Image (cartoon, rainbow, N blue to C red):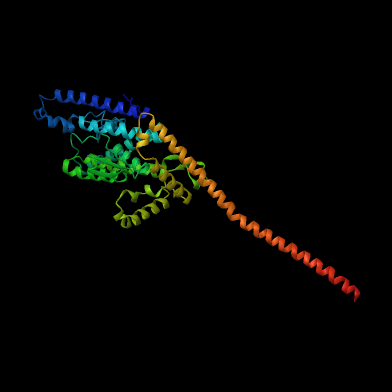
Amino acid sequence: MARTNLPPFTRALLLFIVSLSALNAVLRANKWRNSLDSTPSATTVDNYLSSPQWAIPYLVFIPTKSIVFPWTALTGALVENNVVALAISGGVIFFGGRYLERAWGSKEFGKFVLFVTIIPNIITFSIYAAWHTLVGNTPEYPTPLNGLVALEAGFLVSLKQLVPEHTVSIFKGVIRMRIKHFPAVFVLANMLSGPLLGTDTALWLSLFGFFTSWIYLRFFRISEITSTATGGDATIMKGDASDTFAFVAFFPDAIHPFLAPVCDVVYSTLVQLRLCTPFSDEAIEAGNESAASRSEGGLPSIMDGRGGGRRAEAERRRALALKALDQRLNAAAASRTTTAPVTTVQATLSGDSADTGVGAGQLEADTTPKEAQA
């Protein structure tokens, strides 16, 4: 029987999700049971599952109420209210977390999880709090913010960065979709489910999870890459300047001509306001080479948990190193080939000059006696 090997942060994250969700279920059940006599409508199961009345304010993020429990900006994202949502979130962490932590390392993966859970929660909390203040009708039980929706959107954005061309097949190949299309489909599905199913919090969390993860990976995440643009040496890069990770690349090719000018204007404005640093040509070239090398590696090599993935990853890195070395050798050979004709021409010219000098000397020697005779 194969042993499941989870990286440390992914293992801890999965444990926290299960533990906090179980604790939340126990506390909700006790709160619901204690109010059965005073609240007749609470006897229905639907009321228990959907009503924000039973939310635990010191575990989930509740607008206008959890401000005295600041840690809920993080713990709220690790709490699921039902078994189905918990199973989905657990699967996302098990597979997505395992892949990303092995690709980035535990430290970088941990930073990413913190950013993509806390920032969307705080922004969504602020929107709901501002809305309740402007309307002047704060509900007695505001809708709580909880669940891994923001982090799920962030995971899809990360996979789009790492393996955009990988194709996922489900139902024996009946449905096939490339990973690069997953983030937009996920956000669109949550935008539609908001007005249809009443899950408006999922709309905001998925949207801000998408933007937060893309902004962090595009402009701020520190990574080490090797490319011919940097002379084949490992270089520390800030962000990902590759064309495949541009914002417009998340959308279908048909709307790129219409969306690209808008994105360019927004980007230029942010650069002028010094809210982001423009990418150099070397950074773009290095990012494109790094994106190409990541695509060559594919998704399954790191997902293999039986040791074969590590060997395959080592072989892939070795092949990329040999490829970079070969490119450097070819570049050096091309450089020598370019300079060699110049040297030959100079030598030829020098030889011609020498011959000319000898001829001139002989002419002078021949002429001098004649002049003497004259």
